[in-house]
Length: 142
Ligand code: T46
Image (cartoon, rainbow, N blue to C red):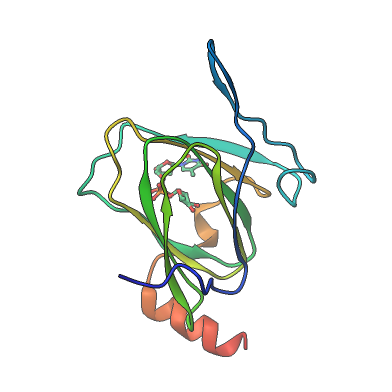
């Protein structure tokens, strides 16, 4: 298992407050307050499969927040030097990813739901989907 304590550059881990009562649970995400950027885009990942990894790419200049809503998954984050495995295993558990970080999402539990927030609109041309290209970019950006 990869370490969880030594996080890559640009990665933060924390928990959003969960407001729960007998009616159910609520989590609130606020730009520039609970997450450190302005939100341009929100997308939700659900109906996932345990054996099917998602992500497996990096972005050049994007900030993202992955907020676990229900269920669990494993997130691997890698800045080209430090690689960590984070268990998003409770509601509100949040990872901020800022800048050149390779990410992989695996081991989704049944019913897993993750809300994702980004400071940029969707742009496929901004994705780095080849790991060797990612490593080269890491080396040149040091
Ligand atoms: C990331 C991880 C955590 C859109 O049309 N708009 C969007 O905003 C997104 C995110 C995706 N799409 C389309 C593009 C593909 O045809 O949805 C399809 C699946 O996207 P993708 O294969 O990129 O999904 P994931 O789960 O592998 O990756 C996504 C994000 O793309 C990525 O930025 O960090 O979730």
